[in-house]
Length: 313
Image (cartoon, one colour):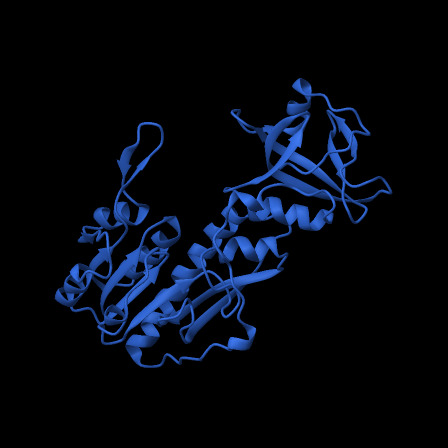
């Protein structure tokens, strides 16, 4: 099948590779423009561009999608299908309608749940036990198109967003390859989404970072997992703002006030939470420092047990 692929970050790389390995004719790859990165601010190509060039594919990086340039490129490539995975740009209607078989998208949730920019993070933030990927026909609305295929997977109790991101990228790639094969064979079935069950996953912001110890231990644990690696959960410890990178649910109970430091020594750092649960802070990153274990942090910043932590503003 003649396919144009559109994608940008690491999440999209397995999908492009899967289509190429399935023997499809990848007529071109659209990805976002190179961006400056790191301290040197040197332009860096997106991960999808790196793979596309390694595969010998033609790469296109239009800055805009609505000025006619991208449409002209797509029209010249004459694809049967456009496959999209985390491209990061909205396709106008004239592009959606151009391919013979339309446009399909790899979305990292079980639609209609978690439409939007950060479905992986919000599934963890909300304490979901299960998530998955959806291949859908693209429509004008935000992730509203008909469902062509879905695959489910459990979310580990200690799995963070970065880890789940990698698993769903691979899961989505395999599902995309299978769905494209079904479209080619004419056996794919499209099922409309149930609008009554739709939920949304908006972009993340640093406003989500501060840890509020009046919340339950599980909610705080989910906050840490769901905001990894960005923007990361944060807490004020001994007057030092720290990113909290990893926590553990201890299963213990306490009657101490939320935010009370129950233990702070070489065995660990344990905090009382709003539901009477106890959360262990396992890995921290003080501002301007490298990540370290909680006991390593405590060597330079001792915190007396009984200290009551407040929300980091």
